[in-house]
Image 1 (cartoon, rainbow, N blue to C red):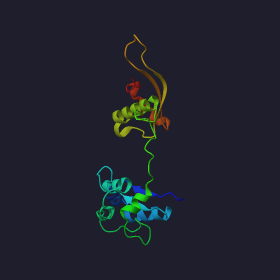
Image 2 (image 1 turned 30 degrees about the horizontal axis):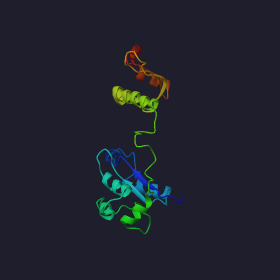
Image 3 (image 1 turned 45 degrees about the vertical axis):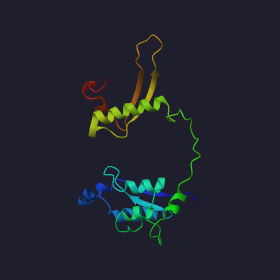
Image 4 (image 1 turned 180 degrees about the vertical axis):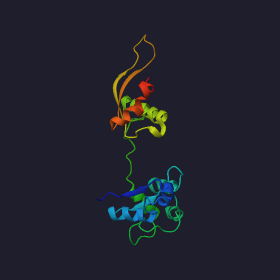
Length: 185
């Protein structure tokens, strides 16, 4: 492909725990595997979004920033495979050439999103599921909005939403519904 590819490996903060249990690769092995899979990638950047580790480097590369080589040096010693063979660093103009220019007029000034109300409702319901069920929640659940009714003039100001919650396996229904439907409202 002629489009520049930047690979971001997230959750590197979990690597030490997984290595102690012998469940994963070293960071360098992970980078080299991605390099083998995508040899034309311009950059393979390991980071931890939760710990905010190297997020600033990604931001500088994507948004353009002053002194990208210094940001890359802040990663520590050069990581084998992070850059294409023969390349030791990236200069500012090279990184800027990877990111296409935006025409700046994709949406109306008053538009706040390209998603509809049903999407936002499904995300709110899904968020409530994740929050109330904690670690028990099946993260593969999907919320489908069946009915969305805004109040008419003179009615009580309550928007009524009906939704279906889909889970991957029947055994997960009990987690979402609760004992005798206790978690449904």
